[in-house]
Image (cartoon, rainbow, N blue to C red; front, top):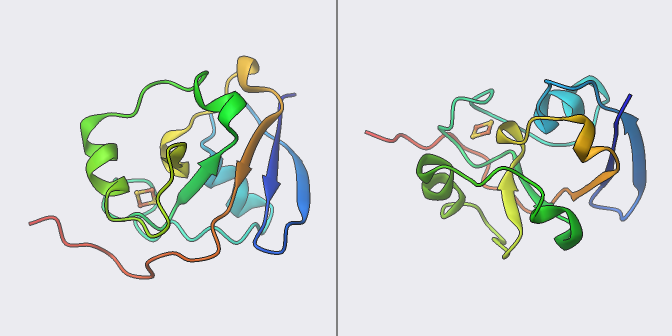
Length: 112
Ligand code: FES
């Protein structure tokens, strides 16, 4: 089974089994990684913001425009930021390294 490595706010590494087809957000929630995900993957918040290790960033599917729009609202945005709910595990992503940012915006964003 592929693995994801989460680096948490305290710089601790968590190497976790990551079943294919699950999002990074779902995997984080199953293992008590502190990643919020207020809208549960419906692209209506940016609280699932993760910073992808640059080596892995290029291997991900490109972000959709909706994801880009939400990412713009994330605190601490970086060049390799993505929304955790939009990264779906595949075998190719075995060993993926993502960092949980220390600051998130803790509220739902009303898109309307
Ligand atoms: S959980 Fe809200 S956009 Fe990912």
